[in-house]
Amino acid sequence: LSIKKNIHLTSDDLRNFIKEINKEGISARSQSRIISGIKSFYNYLILENYIEVNPATKLESPKIGIKLPDTLSVDEIDKIISAIDLTHPQGQRNKTILEVLYSCGLRVTELINIKISNLKINEEYIRIIGKGNKERLTPVGKKAINELKLYLSKFRSKQKIKKGYEDYL
Image (cartoon, rainbow, N blue to C red):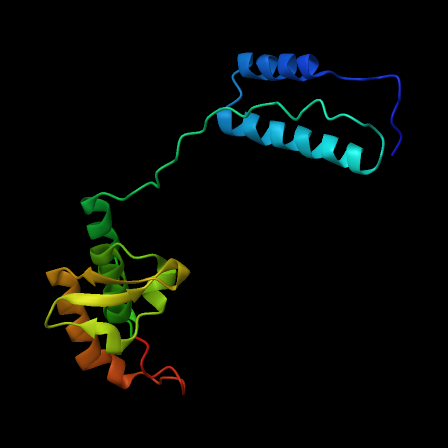
């Protein structure tokens, strides 16, 4: 790495640079990534003894709002579910997956780890093990209950289940 030792940027130089990229309409998220990169670069320069003072330490990233995930409308969900080919052997399984996922608002990892022993169909809830191994009871909608019953009674029994996975839905 070759660095010209006669070029020294100050905190004011960096703040002016941030003002310029802000004027250019660069998003707050991108500005935040740029600032993070600048700070990391200066930390590297200090670590390698190229400089003694980090002019980027007091740079502040713009406030970034929490971005909510995009959601599907009821019509979009219904279109997806109605597009499932129920003549295919996995059709009912796929319909059950989508109904439970949608009805319970689960993460995919939560869905794939549902155990049959955690289904409380008559009480209309499922015991879910979520992020951080936290447990919660999640209500299940009527459509999802009906699909679960149908899947368990008519389709799952015909599938070959790997040894050790008998309790997984």
